[in-house]
Image (tube, rainbow, N blue to C red; front, side, top):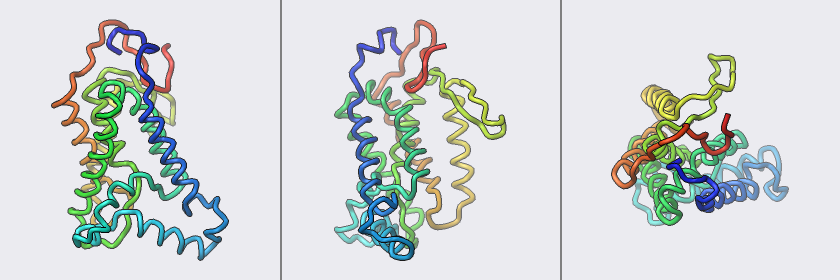
Length: 236
């Protein structure tokens, strides 16, 4: 996106590795429903609750100071509650993660992803200190990727589907799509009283962290020619 050939850019191996890890962890866990040893019906529900309780973030437990809870904001980044949760997160990471990784470099990107994801989870726990519900998912880290993308590639065009536009595939500048997404998350976060359903606050925190990090540590790309397509779509 800086006037060089995309083929010369290094492959975003960390993004691919994160996608693969999330898929693998989901497939071998009880949430996928594909592992017979977890049982079915009530037994499967119990196994899922125990699994998420062990590896996910429980705000009240995390803030208790127990040493065993401190890694959970990291382990929770690789857990997903169901197929829709997994696939929606992977779609966002696939579309936006590669270009952000290429700008930051592999080493810095993996630290950025894990660090912002951890802080987003922690901030959510601080906002809901008495909650015994379990929080799982890579949304906080992926939101940080979106925030960094907004700073680094604000004029890249992204194909989007909006329900109020009859799900027509339309292409908009990244800054329009991402700021609209952030506004929706912010409004939803203000309406949620307690307990994780969708952790909108973690999304807002992650996005803000990602944008600020990219603003402080990276320079935005200056597009000198036609605006290129984002990862996952082709040029017109």
